Length: 271
Image (tube, rainbow, N blue to C red; front, side, top):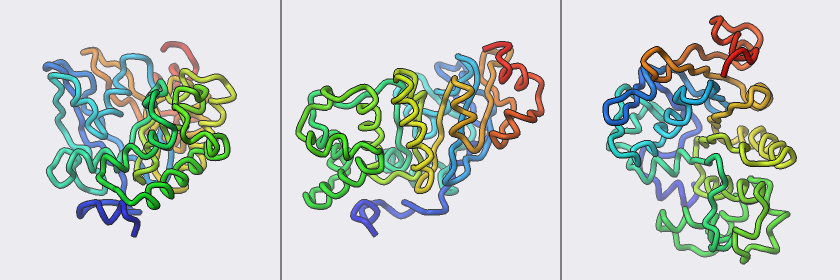
């Protein structure tokens, strides 16, 4: 057991963990942004959430590790569970939840003046880990996992701002990986990247799903079809709240969807 796992309270890491979204409604100051959404996130697979802007994809993604709570007036009904445990219960402290369910944002957000090394180590320090050799090993392992080690191993003391956009995004991925999450949430992670960097991130997701579960929000239908195993399609309802139209394997969503609205969206007729 690693030092990270041994520092995690009961109910921590488990190879059997899976996220489950059950009848989830997210409201901001009483107005629904997501309504009555339910689907399963299978372990060690990539699940994509697709749908037009305003359909609640990012809100739902942020609710999976309670980041939406940073918005004043945010409330949630229904249940989101990790390994069968409600993530909104006291059984999973918030700091532990966010180490078990990491997040990568649309735009790379490294700490720009901090070094490459310190960026990756920041989560470990936040968890109270102080063993220098363990932190160094964890940083290297995370950078290797993020396919960044060869590029930055001689620049670990350089400021993160000196890296390219694609390198900064992989640095953010490494920062999330350093604390050994079970689930990695990715919100449009390639939206601000060039095609080469986008391909690198997409290839990285295929490598990472061998060891963790990934949920990705994307507006790029080709990307969703390339990288994801399962897919959930959300659409804005009459009350302007995002609703789940259907979820299934990516192959079925793209080749044999059940709902005509899914057919229209995949075909580019709206959105």
